[in-house]
Image 1 (tube, rainbow, N blue to C red):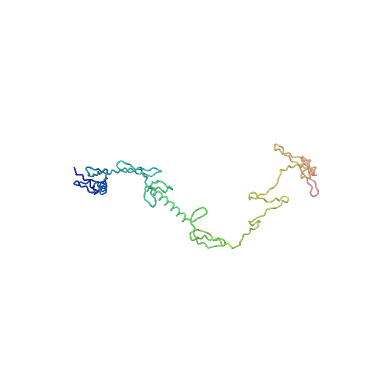
Image 2 (tube, one colour):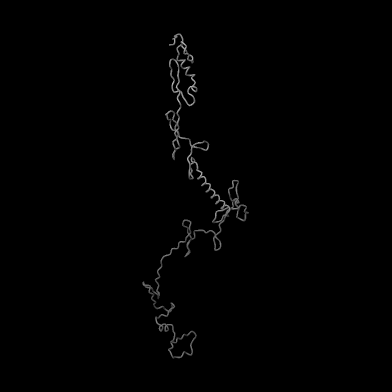
Length: 294
């Protein structure tokens, strides 16, 4: 057993087994502070225990055991990673999403989408390029085809003004416009309409006899004619029954008829003499006399 010297305490960090001095707390701390962890524990190790036996400090080195676990992402959340050190597992951390300025994880897209957090697959890129090429080809065809009333196409600039036909020109941003040089105070006077000229008309005509005024309804013109059903009640030699049978009665001479319903009666009323068969025709007569042979 070492000799105990109560007159002094050893506060140095170096342990001396031949010294009679008792190691103080200061000495223990100093020894711990100067302990070479890298030398004792080596790379990949840590000091798991410190002990003292007969005044000698010992350190136990243990090897680190580290493992990482990656959890796959879902359609709405990114993948997560968790780290375990010597069976102690920390909280899972979701991996950062990729941006235009930082690396990260991203979700692949197989169809065109407005989602800016997804990345296109090569197949999708090829498909988009193909469709874009088709549209560019179609656009080139339209541009190289002259525009018409029924066809979208290109136009040429450089038209020279002719009368009131003005050319299409471009501004500094290549936007098309037409410059129509109207004079200050210039106005258009609508001519009156007539048999040969399209023009305007005035409303407000007052009815005169069977001349009726033009009126408007929701800016559409019309003429109101107040017709009413008229039943003819005068005497007529012609009548129509309900079964559509036409009946003729005597038409007087002053109405263009004969006043009779038979031939003989008609001749008598009209003053036409009758010559029977075998009789000679009259040898004389006045201008306008009518003779009927039967």
